[in-house]
Length: 164
Image 1 (tube, rainbow, N blue to C red):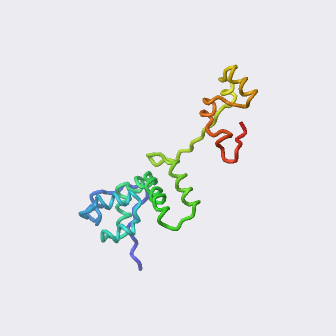
Image 2: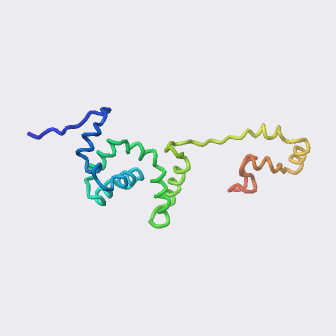
Image 3: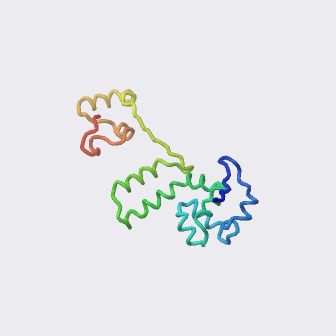
């Protein structure tokens, strides 16, 4: 008959004293480096090999000390590695663009942030002076401040027209 493994129930706090007594990472002379590498998305298998510990002990230690959550919040580091390697390895453009796009949407706390920008064109037209309106009606020329506010204009849009 197989001996049942002693698994703790989810949500039950870790006894740090017991963990530290049995943990190879806690007693390792390079504990801080191991923790830093884990949080910075170095592979647990690579950490285990480099520091002569087991991959399981890396995960147990990370779970006991809340390093998993720190790692998740630090997802920008993983994306930076992908972006940095774009010129060194065979990757397709879509993967690089996706990594850059994701990187731009993650804030410093590791939170996904959707950035939406809307411009009320009616409000901008209402801001135009009578002279600017006349010029727009006769020549189709918008004031500089208008174009700066809405971003890309007909002259610098890909495809030549943005519908303004």
